[in-house]
Amino acid sequence: MDWNRQPEIYKPGERHGVMKRILLKLSGEALAGSKKTGFDEETVRGVALQVKDLAESTQVGIVIGGGNFWRGRSSENIDRTKADQIGMLATVMNCIYVSEIFRSVGMETEILTPFSCGSFTKMFSKDKANKYFGQGKVVFFAGGTGHPYFSTDTGVVLRAVEVEADVILLAKAVDGVYNDDPKSNPDAEKYDEVSIDEVIEKNLQVVDMTASILARDNKMPMWVFGLNEENSIVNAVKGKFTGTKVTV
Image (cartoon, rainbow, N blue to C red; front, side):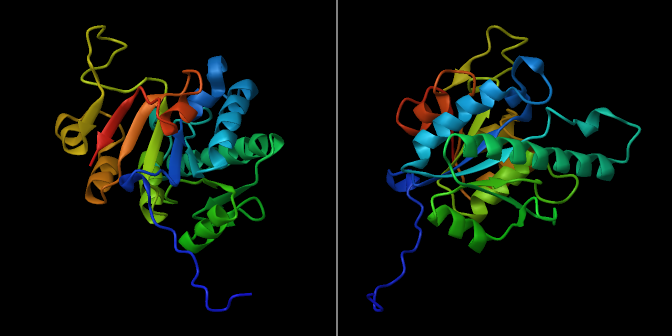
């Protein structure tokens, strides 16, 4: 053993032309498929196979929303703090399920949370995340920020900044960022590229405002694309990106 060899230090690479570490945000609703609630295993397995392809050369972290189980803001009869706590637990359930599907196709995974979940998950720390990335594992960041009043949008930007990801991939039901809602306005125009300053100024709803400002202040780029397009995750990373790049 060479005791004089210096340990390898992770250095973000995308901004220098090589994507080494990504953080993928999946919506809970997208994972439910046409059922709109719970899980659609075929959809999740399709995501797993794409991530398996990427994980051979890129370190992958994942954040999943909880909308396939709980959207607490739609209820006025529950205290906001409690509603958000239920939402955090929904993201934990999602990560446990998706992690197991990933394992079924041959990947190793770990789930990190900002609060204790017994033996279900492990407590988040940057050192622990980096250790698992270095072991070639897909790392799931569940439970949001661990605090109410912060969405999983903010959670994914926070984790991306903490673990020094090169880019956030936002896999959505819509195939990019538009100047208006394409569902209600058929003439809405899609951006190929838009700055985070313009996103904030025009409130373009890429992520919520707290997450947008955090991304701007920490120079964290985001790529927005449609999850339902064939091989969309792989294509985004391997040079066939057709969504919107949010630059910083």
